[in-house]
Amino acid sequence: MTDPAWDELPNSVEPYGILVTAGDNDTFPLWYAQHVEGIRKDVVIAVTEPLNTEWYARQLVGNPVYAYNCRRLSSSRPETSGPRSLPGSSRKATSWSCA
Image 1 (cartoon, helix red, strand yellow):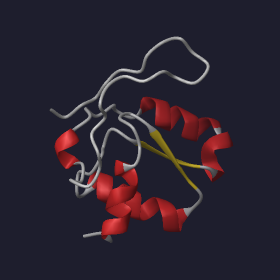
Image 2 (cartoon, helix red, strand yellow):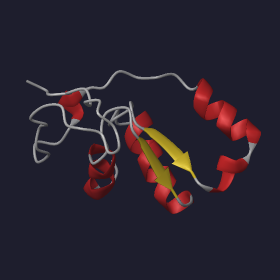
Image 3 (tube, one colour):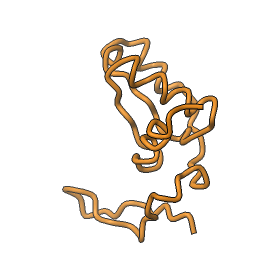
Image 4 (tube, helix red, strand yellow):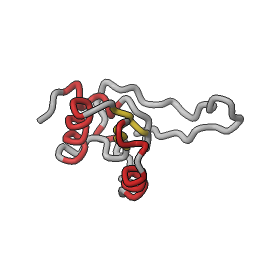
């Protein structure tokens, strides 16, 4: 089991978001939370160091996309009340309420 703080970090990201990490100490606890504990598997964990390599970019693109599972969110995270405007766009974001 990971530290609860590491479990909460993926919950701070919107559904299907990307969480960028700086190195092993940031990355491994997040990977553990995702792959072992099943926390926010919809979030992509991207490590900055190998991002400029072709193989890593191919790996990130080729990874499966997991369904957003709001039941894995902590109860302390507020639910989104509805769509909001995207910066610099007239389009609205899709709502992902857990109701």
